[in-house]
Image 1 (tube, helix red, strand yellow):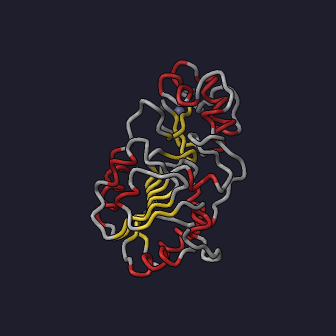
Image 2 (cartoon, rainbow, N blue to C red):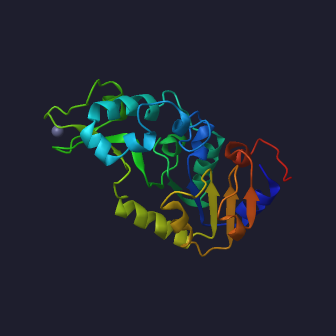
Length: 241
Ligand code: ZN
């Protein structure tokens, strides 16, 4: 934990956390856009092609092969960042988590108000009858996962070319608008709609926790270039450089 951050948290009443892939890397889930991430690994197509609606519709077998192998990481557990955010919500300090991650780790840590901008691997639906299926239905299937009605089961994950869920976006915007402190963590803010969401923040303190500089840094009260799990962990002693 960092004294500067704890000071801001102590005086805040309506914290909102907005996070990206960097929040989950300490849980063993690779960051698509990092140097060691999926974008630099070998596959017949680049991940951003495979994870598009067109590819899903035209090459479902290959889509699901990639999806099972790369998107459904076994054994990922919440880290200190997820746990602290859940704790802050239980203490009545944190109002919402807005995340670009699809791994469900915030809920696993106990967070309740979570806006998943890009959906979740834990929700899957038959494209024909709408029947719900858990993550395991895709994980344990082979080829193209099918519903008992014969329809294809599709993850409730926002693919490239697909629109974001408007209700989720509206909830995220509303939470950010009412926040007195906004913590942005583990995101470069380079991808839509991340940067756009920040414009709704009207509160006192913007805190950015990210290993690399972001475009929000110049608006921030506090910028912390350290692993977010360490920063939010009450048991880790940290100092600003
Ligand atoms: Zn069905």
